[in-house]
Length: 465
Ligand code: MN
Ligand code: MN
View 1: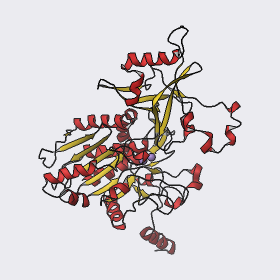
View 2: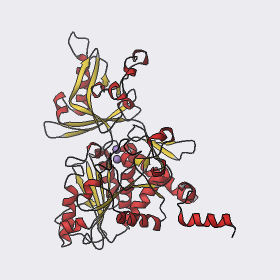
View 3: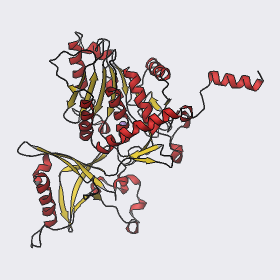
View 4: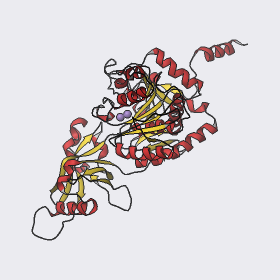
């Protein structure tokens, strides 16, 4: 062996493989990734809010033999159940041969995404236009939501106890809604302001109408006309907005991106690009040893508070019910459980390279990204996965030929973020973040790689096997 060959061999033996991830994949694997994404696109197109995602997921699950969980019943290995938490969060379980006696395998993703919600009293008229007042939801960059077509999704609960679902503006055949932006000609003062101050939350007002109800000499006839249309269409009156959850979301469909179509652009990849693989891993799971549980949760983007977020006890109660069935204490089953917190990470963006640390960032087409910790300012507010659990997850990925990488969220002290991982860790569960790298995270049109989302599916499937 020549000296250079010996160095080469040594490098291969003890250094990391520098070859780009996607270059290690066969054409067949890439084809499987593309095929998997054809199932994801309709899921994402439909699932604009957590309610939409729950509805679509239950439909898929029922077709695959999942039935609503009944805590009074005894289930056997291979049975498939789901729990619908208030139409906003969902748990699916495939009962294992050992049940939860040695803990459950948990994959938890969130199905809420940054968006713009209506205020409880939204409708007003000004200068011949009807508008909605809004209160944004989650970490948005406000300027990204101006001057683009928006749809309205949600539910209105009426005084008589009935409720009506609203899905307005998705179809090209119907109108859409829109928030206005200031013309550059009159933005000389605005552009001098720091970005944080240039766009205010109270300015995110949505145009919802422009024609008066009649030519009568009355006030607020444009507003009246909007309410008249809504009354005819949904049977609602103005005070029904008080008991409604209505969200403005982008109208555009998921699209392939790049001349090679290797990426997908769409609204709400964070975190539905992890929710869908976790859902499909449950649907495709063969009878596991340990009960496999996929949780699709709400409220991650606002801190996981509330009864449909992961700071709630709904998962704890579910595992406790399963444990009772198996004749063990709930807290024993929980303490032995393992979790993949299925959430996205920021993919390295060459345009904003200075915001990342290149050696510890995740990259498009390098596979699922494991984030040992998140947080900000010296690992503040994060659960830091143990070396032991990292080792376990890494071995699982390697043994199943799953393309994976590690990634931190950007440069130290630049900013930060969190996931549901810490709330699960606080239940005394081993947990680590594992998900898909995203470009333009939290923008109304985010980008992910088809290969990476497929590798997330493979990872959750291996975790459930
Ligand atoms: Mn997320
Ligand atoms: Mn997010």
